[in-house]
Every structure is written in C-alpha cells, then in structure tokens.
Image (tube, rainbow, N blue to C red; front, top):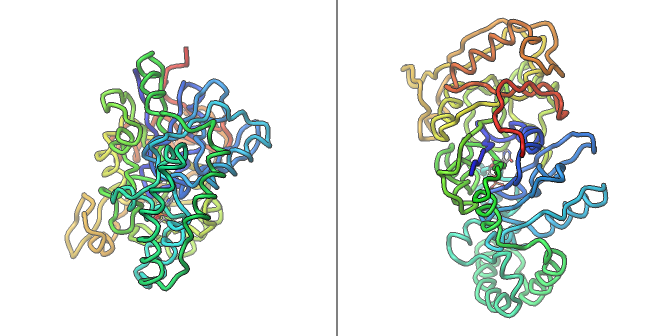
Length: 431
Ligand code: IMP
C-alpha cells in the first residue's frame, strides 16, 4: 500500500504541478490533502496549458482517479468553474471526487479575509484573499459548513442560522462591512449541491480501499513547508499544514503507508506575500530571475520576490518532512548566469548559524552566507539525460543535494511534461 508525496520544499510555487502531472502516469490515485484555491498549479502537456487551483494535476491521466481530501477547503464556485473549464477542453473529469468532510469556503470567508487583511495594515500577511484563513478558523472553531452538509438541506439551513449571525456581527460591528442574508446563502448552497452532487463522496474510503488493494497513491502537496502553519515562518504562513503530517490528517490515511516523500525545490528561491526570505535579491539579479522565469503568481498575478537558493531553509524542509528524495525544478532559469550562489549558513547578530530560527523576527535579521559557484554557458533547457548536463550544472545540483541532505532524483528542465531528467525510478510503473 504505497503512498508517495509531493511536498513543496520552499515557500510554494516550486513547480509541483508539472511534477505531479509527470509522476501521475504511475499512480492509481492522485489526491490533494491541504490548502484550497490559494494554490495555482500550471500544467503543460499534449492537451494544452492548464492552470488548476483545486482539481489534482493527475486529471490528465485517464487511468488515475483524482480526489480532493477532507483537509482541503473548497470554494464551490472555483471547483465548478474548474470542472466546466476542463470539460470544455475535452478533459474527462468523471473520476473526480471531493470529500464530504472537506470544509466549504463560504462567501463570508472571502469577505472576512479581505477585511482582516485591510485591518492588519502594515503588518498584512499578503494572503491570496481567497477566504482560506477564515474557512480554517471556522473549521477549528467547529462552525464550518462541510461539503457533506450540502447533501442535507434541512440540517444545512439550521447550521447557517446558527453560524451566519455571528459572522454578520463580526463583519458589521468590527469591520463595518455588509451583512450576509441566510436565505441567499442557502439558495447559493442549493445551486452548488445541484452541480457538485456527482462528485461529493467519502474520499477517505476511496483512498483507503486503493491502498488496501495495493494501488499507489500520489499525494499532491500545495503551498510549501515554509508556509506551514506550525513549521513555517509564522505568522507569515498559510492556515493549513502542507507538510507530510498534513497529508495523513488531510486524507485520513496512516503515515505508515508513505513510502516516498519527495520535496520539490526551485533552483533558486521565491516567495509571494509578506514575511522574511533571507536570500532575497532586491537588485538587477533578482529582477533578471523574475524576468527569465516569469515569476508572477498563478493565482493572484503578484510579482514574486526572488533570491538565491537557501540551503539552510532547504535542509530544514528535508528534516521536517523526512524527505527521501528531492526534485529540482527550473534549473534552466540559471542557464548563462555566473556566478550562481547557494546560501549555506546565516549570520545572526554576529554569529554564524546553520539552522532556521523559529521566530520570523530573527529570520528577518539573518544575513545569508554564500558559497559562490561557476555558472554554465550551455543551455540545460529541455534536456532529458543527466549525462547531457554541462559539468558546472551537475556540480551545482550535487552541491544542492549535499546541502539538502537527500538525493536529487528528478530534475525538471522545462515546463513540458517530457522536459524531465529522471535519475531513479521514484515510483514503480502502474501495474
Ligand atoms: P493564504 O493561504 O491565502 O491565507 O495566504 C497566506 C500566505 O501564503 C501568503 O503569503 C500567500 O502569498 C501565501 N500562499 C498561499 N498559497 C500559496 C501558493 O500556492 N504559493 C505561494 N504562496 C502561497
């Protein structure tokens, strides 16, 4: 009963969509387990270019069942739009399931996310304003609406009557916003129910049965380890656990089923939103990386902050997740840049440290200590064989591997599915 997880090793946007699309060809089930439509995964394959926010990137493989687990928060409008968009382009979504335990992002969550961000002023987190945080707040406070509630209109109406007045009090009295009407929300829920009925299911059962039958399950992580609510750069984090522990809770599967934990890293660092990023380059090199790699958010379009590879943070992610393998993406972005730098330690208050501090205020004061390496002139873009990489690129990858603390088993050299160097089997072929 093997499970393999794809986990973001940095601050999200590591190129997990491309990797999941590539590896899904070997999986029976592909499952999202945390986050919501704050994620934006780009996939480029023979069927075209797609941007997915909720539907797992395995959807392009007809033999893979795609599921959205209980740990995900679902904006039904976004899910419906995504399903319809895929269908309009000839993609079969009939295997898709969304957990009846997954929490619904209600319209008031989106409004609250915006109002709370405005109220934070200068210390805003820079959320995606998709209602993610407020939806998880309600889940924890036990006042959330779940996908399964859409199936029982009477209970749903009772829950809305119990929950909405408190939300309205917050919206109107604290933030001076406009209240929501229970009847309109209920009507909206009934519309969602009509459209999503075929997809709402006991996903946990589906996944557990697959594991019992010896099928392989690919866990599609969203965001990244450094955005983890517990292990990331708090409070500049998302409201879920994108790390491996979140996968077990977010799908209801035993951690003992996990055979491979694959951490995805970009060959450099990026971050969108507020919070520390020690290797950030506020200069022409940072601009050049952003320009070459088109580092703008898939979900919000915001410019991403760019910097050199941070090996201190990368090793931290390896340890938090117990990564068995690393996956390196966007190596080609560094083609022709020399030197290339790897942050191997931080200087904090005059001392050299090799571990990530737990407080964001400390991390914000950390100055990177770099190892400088020669770049490479020959392009790596599109290569599919390790042997064909220029020697300097191989040396760079080997240095990253050493620093992260696990082998780099897959290298992505371009956005297309085939632009991939696979160095070990990683996941056995589907039987
Ligand atoms: P939220 O998840 O919308 O609440 O945003 C919290 C923080 O996580 C913000 O800094 C966002 O920019 C960041 N974030 C959330 N989702 C992603 C993602 O998929 N990629 C990169 N950053 C993200």
